Image (cartoon, rainbow, N blue to C red; front, side, top):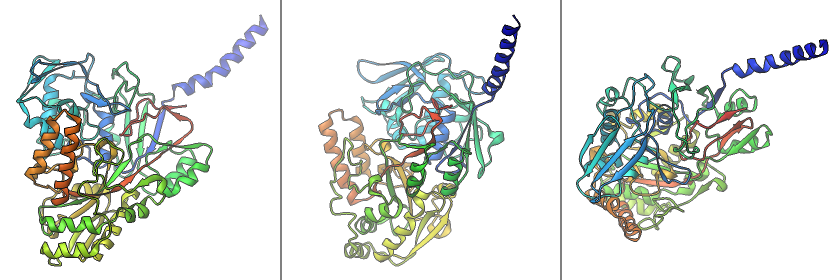
Length: 522
């Protein structure tokens, strides 16, 4: 008996520390590609704000790991025989973080605000005769004519219509929201948010995930850690040192030239969750001279050389691809129509076009992001190329979040506006003319830079309504030819990133967006 009693005490003594450890909240500490300073994922398309959106809010539809459209907040939907009335029913158990149920009034208000900002949302909303609530869980989108764009728009990975309470979604589209209540798997801790230091999210205990496995931005969003901290650490070497020391658990996008160091550490892995890669974008502001003239925009297409940028930033050809297809090499709509002779450092042709475009040597304001390594070297390379083509360039340096705010300004370049900025976009957002916001040319409603062209808009609309794939490819070719004639932007090649994670972290989901559900910390 005594031996049994002693054995029981020993077992309890051994179990006690494990029990205490099990009760400790599990915190995942992550260095993201950028600090978070803006919190409205409808107001801006910046990826760090989009990523924040997926933490806090939920979506009606989503894309799985194979980019197939799946329902998320929607339980079921039907389409009328005439293809005009789409009826959607929300699933049970949807609740905002403030305890209020999600209703169709919230959904419709969220969709309305989103459609005023997003280029694909604008296409969808223009095709609607009516958007109405049937009851608290059912709503309808009634079309003027059949179109294939409905689910495409509601499931897009970036610029998705995140669902917010009506009182918040009623915020004018041009103003930023001031309250951050969603119904997603994590709750934003506004009281712990310290820009330049950290952003904190905690598990939403009332979230009811779907029953399907997590896949892409779809499926069961199960929070397997109690707390997530996005730690601001702009110096990449410092971040890698912290990862190796176990002070952080993940780096979203470590610098490519640090990959060899990471690979040598047996406690750290490099994993690729975004298998579709990214595309660099050189964006013109068409509101002001000189890029209000298409000749001057064409000049840049001839002067720029993708390899110069890719070598200067990514470096290793294993992780980049020169590509003259606007809608991504390897994608379903890959074509070089209109661009086969572009991106070849043809400075003579560029100078000729600048002359024809009336360029008068006024300095061009080029915005330079200093704190994102994938962008830091881009503007200096662009400056050198533009000067070789005969332009004067005023490169203005700032951190990324300041640039994100600056790019929304329509002021003249010498009054706080801009002429050119460089950014990047996800390959999954670049595969067709609908999700690719940079080809939108709807004037004041277009993405920053505000291109305005009726023919591009007509072709995008035609693509949206066409269901025959062969005809869609013909439309894409015509669209690219038009974009070469009246450029909306230049695309500067494709590249891939890996994510660095400690080996006690598991469950990262293959997704075009970095998501944090399903991740375990062992």
